[in-house]
Length: 231
Image 1 (cartoon, rainbow, N blue to C red):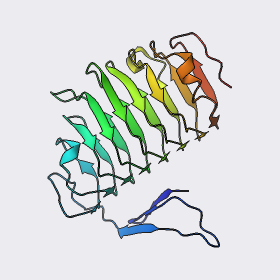
Image 2: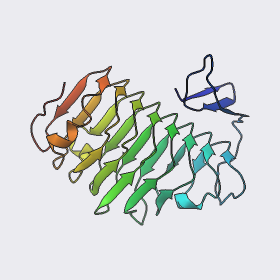
Image 3: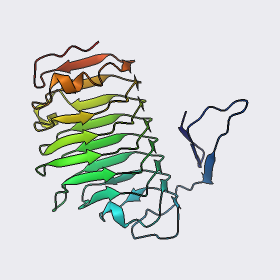
């Protein structure tokens, strides 16, 4: 399986595949430093960024960087589109708190995230998130408190190592307009699956992904209907 390992300044991204007789493994490894500067300007010609990507710039303005050995996070993205990133060894935090609300988030080439994926506070009408190539999230997947988000597309995502949370228990966690969630390939959740308080999300949609094996059980209630036929 794909995996990301970080220890004592060593970071590695290992591509999908089992290591055994007749199998191949491809490894990208770099010695990372805690003092590595964050990426704050366009950085053409470099495929791997050694450190966090903390920026108020648009995500499509990071040149040729495909592998980020750190976190990708900002509250002020105006454009949440990037067709270069493939691996992020840390977490991705999408929080739409800037002066300009992005209407879409399209991470079209992203394959693996070593930490969490968090999508929060996106209020622009018709907002959608698309991660069509994403296969694995080692941490948690959280989609909460998005007043304008109406669609989440990650139909190749098979494994989430932590919790899958769509909505939540509090009013502040609701995704009131979220009507389309495409997680058709989801089969393994290392934590709990919680899908609650998404007023527009129908059981017919939830039932397409709620049959995943969830180590922490499921809590699915108070969406378009009070309950759904999930195992």
